[in-house]
Length: 138
Image (tube, helix red, strand yellow):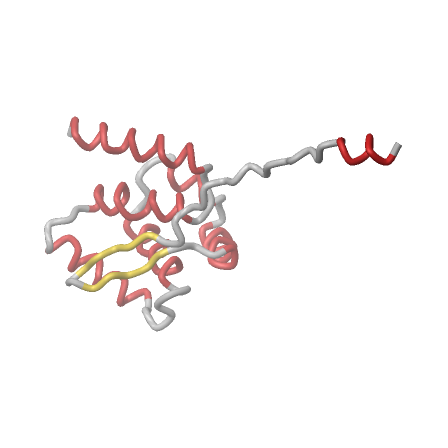
């Protein structure tokens, strides 16, 4: 009787290991790296200020003021001393270095939304691929 119990094999269950998302987006301006990611608090503050669901700002390219606001709030976690005016100056420098508002949207804002949990990892990857195709056709 006890021998039978010893023969019973334990059923191993493997937990599905989800790949982790990147901890932040890196935006390089003037040779300085800025880490960007929206926290839940930052998202709530932006939604209160804009009076819209933040995800709806991606329906079309948002105004530059909104993009600067999103970048400003996403910088607060790692660079809490940056003001909104600092961000506007960094965007000016980014554009002077050869960037554009469209690239600011596709290369900075959309990745911020990805690392901040607005999309699943698969959706984020598909969006990145679609952005690359769209940029190549422009």
